[in-house]
Length: 501
Image (cartoon, rainbow, N blue to C red; front, side):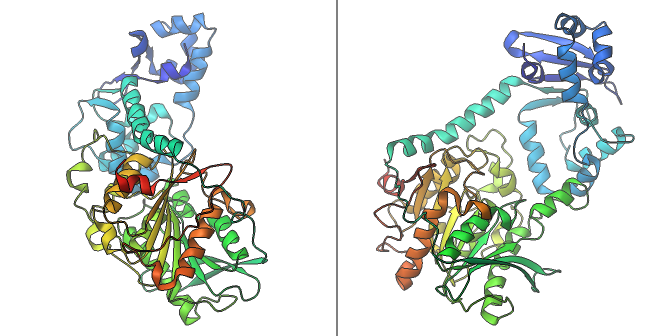
């Protein structure tokens, strides 16, 4: 019997204020064990205890007790009470609670239980010092709490279904592999950190500038990072582009970057606000304005009337907004409240938190002529037909093993609906074995597995000029002789989707 099997399903029978007995259910073995909370916290008490689990613990020479104590009694690495207090009323936290509740059953808890109740309960339960898993379980109001292993299995099977079409398409499509576009360019690069004043933020907007030494080619690209990430995760993309002549600016989005996450987990800041859906595109446009006015001190002059934008995860959603895709709350109504929706995935926690602001977040920037959107959460946020109003051509990249933003519901289904019968020159590339994190690249990696296709799309967009605009006869921006990666093969499945096969 493994510790994972023991931890797979738990039920807590609780008095009014304190839980005395924990029932560990093992559905696969059709059995369960009871253990006192005091024994669960201390393996030495468990091995001397009188509960039925104590007998099993003695038979394993105390190994089960030690593992249970490690899982349930190790202090959590964040200030959970302060975090919960800051998160009160946050749509992001409320959606996360809904997702967790779908994996189990809480008996005796009011239907109105939300983040306010969680914060109040945590404050009542925790006395002094850091909280443990047992503390968190005891903080949940109600008579019993059950987390069923079978429901975890159902969630896993749903994720496998959401990835299956991407895996099938990736396996059936020849990969576009070449080393020419992946090779570093001939130019040395330079890195700067700057900040500018912006009207839409109370404080300055920080940005990293990575540019070729010398004049370069006068082209400008902007890279938007994802939720709780930073420009540093994408400086490899920027380095590759800059070595080939393009100046790259990477904003540090306040309120949803890595420093905000650290402050949020420490209880010093609330989670990202729905307003950030509007603020992030404004960050990018403000940097282009600053580059045009000279407020952003670039090493050499660049054109600002034609810009390419790139982003990953929430940053990819941001660049799609700038490209003209119009957010809408219509799909969120009803679907966000259904934890059993077959297309539900982890990215819906973020998307559903935008319900209050989606209809006011259309922020197209006509200076953006093409975008690269890697793993964007978008199925709920953009309605079918949103691509028809886009002012920029989009290259969408999705990892076949992405469990945060799975390719089926978040890339293949919406992309097929957008391009089928319309075209427009937008492309969907699947990364075989790509997940939500291994397609990024810090500076020292020099671009990672996407460096070739990114350079190809950026070069193609600038070379096409006015023809880069989406349309039924838009010329190809990716070269026919390959642009992929040997380590993580890349396949263009757009034509297959357009034909409906």
